[in-house]
Image (cartoon, rainbow, N blue to C red; front, side, top):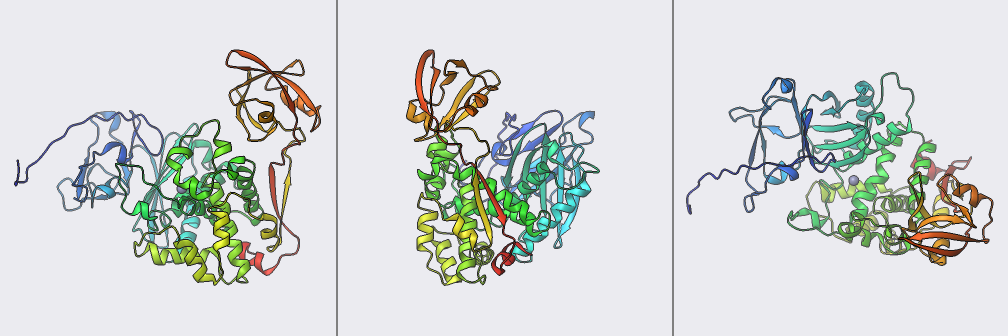
Length: 511
Ligand SMILES: [Zn+2]
């Protein structure tokens, strides 16, 4: 009917069996609703306010179910939801509606306050989490981050929505909440001592998604400012939003006192392993990696290690390099922290999107340095940054060693327990030069059968430079190759503080 408001009722059924943080999942134990997977988009009416009436499923089994979401209850509506209850919730528009995931079920619930902002933690799935320990640690991280960008915090309340499963890892950021998937063994248990690696990684994930509250949910690249949900949205800036966030996620653990400088440097070394061991870093720049996220990063194949660099890990290393460059170039007067705060002031609080060159220009303004060369190499280039030289100024030594003293094949082996299959063959490496290809199944080396258990033993008896005869299946055809073994891969990066600290290192890592 034209010219007159009327009501259109649409009834639809949704298939919800995706346990990831970006989907929706429903069974008799719980429901996880990520708005994009459930709420239909009213094209042309996205700006209109939305009311959502979440109803309790009928039956005794659901009597104890509650609702966890950062959506606001529609207080002035009939049937408004009470806190954690079923009922009517409100969103200002469709964009807000899909930015607040909901969990329905019998989750565990705990809360804490960080800089005056109420925070809640809801954990679904079977677990034995020590909620007191988790909230104490999260509170330290959240308070550090709020103070880092400056009080008051940009959100009135915040929710960590955690799904504990047998295995799993993932997080998705939202303006007032985050949805996290973890293994139940990642969570702290009653009586746990210290900070085991699994729990530390989980806190790093929480810290990462929380940092996005500022960096990407409010400081945004231009392509995300007016997001078109109907098409892929391209930006060359993911290195700043995912990479810089990856630098600060673990750094927040250090700065809030949860880990020590040595531990943090060890984590940086692991990030270096991920970036500097793969040939793809010489093929794709960070700006390209960001732009190609839709077609390359999220569609990995056997050639990914040769063709792609991650804007997460290399982005984190570039954040490190920029931090060190700013500190060293200004005698510690200007740091990456200052740049992040300036981005927040100029682009986060104002809502002014970040254009391609804004970050370089702002860094130059703050520091007075000419950073064109740095950005040309780090963001648009594919050569390695001068890590040893950069770190030396901070009295930190970098060593590259081989994790195993075994000649290298320069490829990634897939071990399914039965056969040795080539998952990837690195560009210009020993296997590739010999003509082997990803997907080939190795059968024998020098006439002796190869198994996942025996291949390292066989290689350990050889030396780099020696030739071996490899038999392999390509499809169902038997082939023979001669491989000249490469030196053991120097695949481990160790960063260590030199005994004598200097002022630059102290202001960066603390005393
Ligand atoms: Zn992220």
